[in-house]
Image (cartoon, rainbow, N blue to C red; front, side, top):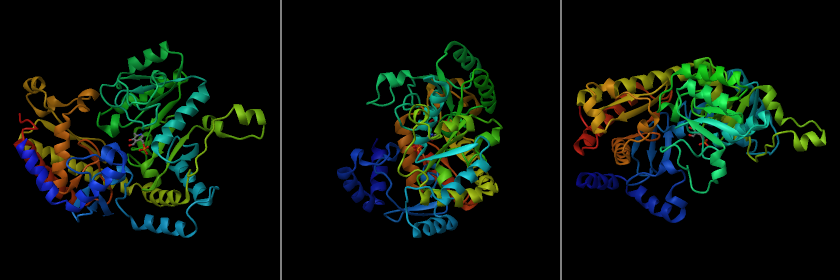
Length: 460
Ligand SMILES: Cc1ncc(COP(=O)(O)O)c(C=O)c1O
């Protein structure tokens, strides 16, 4: 406790300008921050600028950035082609409320890259994408309930806010009616027999939605064989399958997880990399389902037999310009390969450090993501003889590391010049260099030593 206090004091000493902004933020912003995950002890970060794989806060402290705009910046901060495209678009006007050529070009690129994208409809975020995909699936099937998987995150709207954080069957947030909670059915992922049993028993399932990486962009690993089985079972029961590729889209491969794992869903939710660091999202999918957006001119059809979708900023020009600029580069495959290679280097080196220090934990993660699991349960530790014995795919376990450990891990990493995305994990960009990764490894080592010193992690 005393040590943590001393660490906090040294953090505050190197962040005096941030502390001033924090005072102002607490007086002006509800909750003190703009996103629940931006909360941090002793202070949130207040960032001034970013270039490539690095960013700088208002105190001039430099960070190797593995948050990268919540996973949006596959090319890193401020790639010159993207900035040029956004500036050129802004010169012509920021927003028309009408369709425009960049919108169509953006859709065509998505169609070319994402296997399931027979048609494209843009929205403003990943949350809007899952909201709309679920509405489409319900309209298409005339059914109500959604099958989802424990731990998987699909944004913050009422329909999906339950079920992603443990305990998975508890309410996700105040303010969501119980009837909404009842409209979804959450089961553990990985168990195809259970999926088959649910779909045989329940006749009111409108869709199954899944993060193809496994919950929280792979924090809970998922065998791609599960996706293949899920595809087969949902097809057999006529249940539309929705891939939430908000993180994995254009990151796991140019065509997302569906291209990498060769499983084509009926509908896909996209955001983040899609819009090149600007706000944006999309629902893409089968043209027969997407035809529910069609306006025919028949008054009865148009009022009662279609899916309503409005939105002032859908496919806004600056988002379209940034999206096109990023997708042009991603289509060639180079950025995905580079980011994957850097993440691989990071995971390997972090595991070597954990090994050297004998810490009960391991780094893992698919493609250009990484996560770290620390085992702290005394019984499991006693039963494990090597680090491999700690490996788990149990969502509750992977998502229930002690909060004080996670807070201190993040703070120590920041103090040593590294910022992660959420909990213990982050995403790597194509702009990160080997030198960035090696520096991040030294920061990780120092962080591990501090956590050992504070007895927040355990050696085995
Ligand atoms: C898998 C997944 N789906 C949906 C969302 C929600 O996206 P947004 O934050 O753009 O609303 C997120 C956000 O991180 C996500 O990771």
